[in-house]
Image 1 (cartoon, rainbow, N blue to C red):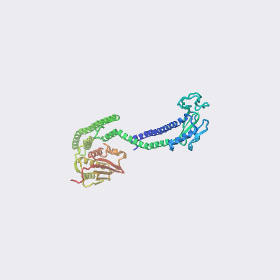
Image 2: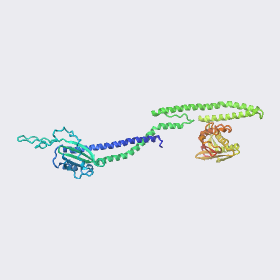
Image 3: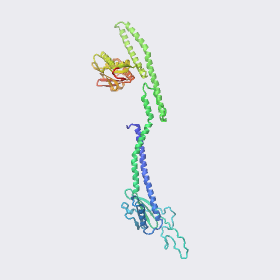
Image 4: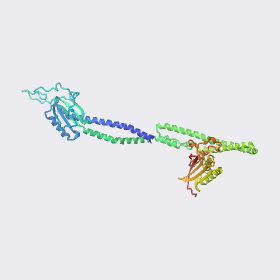
Amino acid sequence: MLHSFRLKIGLLSMCLSGMLLFGFGFLATSALNRVGLARIDRELRALVDAQVRKIQPGGHWRRFDDSLRSIYGEDESKQFVVKATLPNGELLYVTVGWPPELPQHSLPLSLAAAPANDGEGPPIEGDLRPPPPGERGGQRPRQSGEPPSREPPPRRLPVRGPVYASIGEPNGEWRAMTIANEEVTLSIAMNLSGLRAETSRFQRALLVAFPLGLLLIVAGGWLIGHMALRPVNRIARTAEAVTARRLNERIPEERTDAEFKRLIELINGMLARLERSFGQATRFSADAAHELKTPLAILQAQTERCLQRASDGSPEQREYAEQLDEVQRLKVILGKLLLLSQADSGQLPVSLIRINLAYMLRAAAEDARLLAPDRKTTLDAPPELFLMADADLLNQVFQNLVSNAVKFGDTDGTIEMALVERAGQALFTISNTGRSIPMQDHDKVFDRFYRADKSRSREIEGTGLGLSLAREIARAHGGELVLKRSEDHLTTFELTLPLTRSNVPS
């Protein structure tokens, strides 16, 4: 599963997207805090700006504190504290019930680095000095005899600050601001529990959405990988369908992505070249077999005549007999090569008739007893088992299997044959005692001209084509021939053939 390309795409998408989501969550939380603090800072400034722009009478700051509580109520998230001091540090007012988590000595904040003017207007020379004696609020008293004039507006006091800071434990639970004019230094702090609660809700929402988003991303990556692999799956299906009999298979090029079009063209070109080469090789085998049949027939006839003319027991007669055996061997090889070339091209002639497989096997068992009378040959088969097959080709399969069991079996050994019906198939097994086939050669026993014991290849009669031809005949009937086992001096071949009807004759 870990080697799945689609899973890798999904996991890679999850990792990359997870990092992006984590970064987004971190930045979004930080931005939410910054925006919240900026909003609170503006709110604090709006609350106190008008209060420090003019001279306030005594007791004003208590009323200001009470008005804040009446406006915002008892909501803890809107809890305010107020502290007013004179320029010399003398305390004018402090909120009753100062919260213990907020150190009282932390306010007012230091104004050392604060600007002398808040930008609302240019600094007024001497504004930070007290007004001259006899003047109130910076206004000259009206002299006697002067006509009454319109009361001028109150003098707008310059301010220093404001400065802001988050104080309190553990995470700065209060947002404080300090601002000053020529008469008073005012500090106000707002509880940040509301902002912290808002940030916590946002983080909880992210924690819920994060795994769901990752799951969706993994599913999306899996789907994208599946869609991206469609051309590859189409190539795989075509490659799977290509056999010696179906070299004309091609990968369809319509609706193909540009990235895969070149690959498909190359594979189709390769298949076309293979089809041409295989066709040429198949035609060559068939043509060579046909062309050699006539010269071999003539050579056989001439050798037989020479053998008849030679004197009995003479050296010439023995030589002619050996030559005739080699000619016969060549004819057998040519016949098998012709059948194999026809099987390769998918033109093996199969004439299906209804045959009794059990009867055919009993005849094969009798042949084994005649060929190896010193061995114990057994057959376990039902009385009848019918199927549709080519009798001559199927008989050749059984002859090859029996011949192999006799040639490569031990003297005084055993040959066991069995036939059963299983899952709509005829299952035939043949086992013989003898030298086992090496494990590294198990996949080669069906190769053409393969001989397991090369040191005895000429001592034991055979061409190395029997098993290969037997397997091709089995496949032509829709069955299969395999080497079931070869160990502990016991070799077993298994032949399966499909049954086309019940084993009870009609």
